[in-house]
Image (tube, rainbow, N blue to C red; front, top):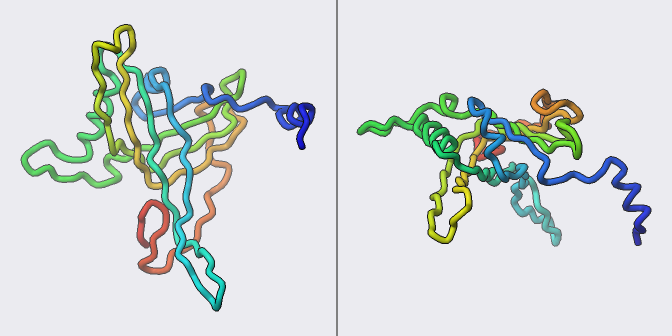
Amino acid sequence: MATIENLKGAFSQGPALPNRYKIMIPGMPEGDVFCQATNLPGRQITTNPRTIGMLTQKMPYGFIFDDVNLLFLLDGSYTMKTYFEEWQNSIYNENDTYELSYKNEYTREVNIEQLDKESEKSIYGVKLKGAFPVTINPIELSDGLTGQVTQLSVQLAFTDWEKLSSGAPSGSGRSSGSPIRRTAIPGETLGGGVTE
């Protein structure tokens, strides 16, 4: 069983604190100030069962992600809501045809970084590639919320994510290496539902 001294030794660099983070959204420098909560993305390996004799194994064939959630405080101009509404409006034309834009016309790269305990140095970060706001959630208004700041919750979908290099000042990180990839068999699905 681990002792207090073992735990102190394991945390020689100090703990990672969830309230020390930075988010970088293209064209919205205030986004980091207004953002009250977010999450780093995960990755789930998708599998199919494969049975040989009496043994059944899970065989990977791709991967999927959950959306990234963002929670913002709203100022008196509804800056963040306006920003995300305009971003969503770039996905389709607001005329009678409602034609969809090409994906490369509305997707952007968003960086999320966990910061060092006492500085702006990034200790871990990810870049969301091909991100766009899939959901702008309803805003709650209530007499019971007197004295509170109105909040906006947004969900970002994305095509893939990659790890940014750590140890650099926040905002300067770049991936220390390309993600490991394999070539898909024709018709097979890889990452984010993209079929090659």
